[in-house]
Length: 443
Image (cartoon, rainbow, N blue to C red; front, side):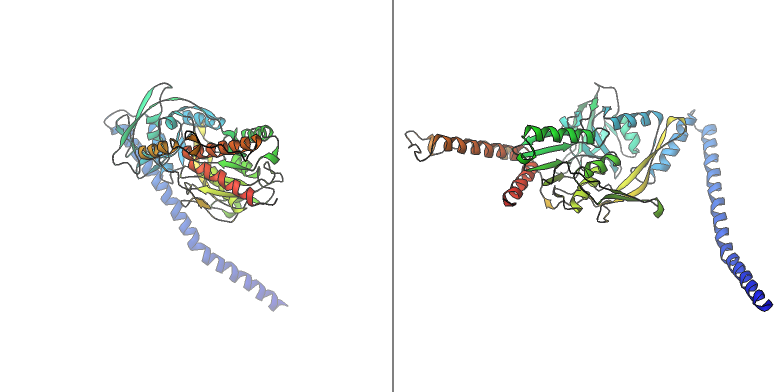
């Protein structure tokens, strides 16, 4: 018994010695790492003091420290950034749906400012700014070498003032200037209308207004159509929607899903991951859905498109989305400032990350650019004549007045559909898909 006890004790001691032997180098590495961090912080303090004492001009210590913080965050990824007290206040206003500016969502690429998307009805949208445009100069001043926040600051200014941005656009041989008058941007999160028998829900952003606007707008369109039975389907138009609040993206997707995962997020620590699931209830009552996306659809838009696509609840039409698959957390800081930090990646229900890849549509449909030649050709087509226009042509005596009226109404619908195809080819294509699904569906 004593021998057994001694053996057990010996085993315990050996285990402790082994643990100490393994842990020793690890503790030494951690200690060296901590020492290196403090050395770098001492270096930062030394540089800061030398700038204060020896720089050719007096410096504002607060601005200097904020610039250092901004640089540290900007070195991580394009979406992490420092928000000064003014910027933090502005961001809080934006999430409520009203702010001053041009009306564009931007990121940074190759040193220049890239337009993710213009916001519907804003000065930038009305001036013709497009998703994918590169802004190289603001009022003649180059943005090359500036951080994204610095470039955005250049574009800010009093409401009613003019700004001239220089744009480089794919397909254009030379850069060109665009003049824009700054204005107060009032975001209408969702615009709803009916095209024929199809309800079109145009979601422009994901802010606090989005889900309430979606619910009220869809309800109104269904009531005006005389009930859900008179609606053949719904188009969710997410084109040029730069995203917004994750919570709103989840709620919008949940509006059309009865169950299952909507999105999951995974941070550096696996235990910090979250899954968000749908609750019962479908605003569309099972009616078919087409989701429209393009290169300006980002972040929250991609969450909605990816969730509905993975659950086969909707057909996704258009072109590949922007590919922003990361989640930013806004953390308040001392002095009323804030830090926007990338804390997780998000994944669609099938487990795919769209980071840098985007959501690929089920049906790729490009939006053709309008050209003078095409417009002239369409004009000549509209001017074409038929048998009925000829002098002395025979009447059709085989149809009743009611049958003729019905044919004329069908022709008017077809002509409206043709006009929509000229104005917005992608939307017309989406509506045609819904018509085809209804025509081939159960009778």
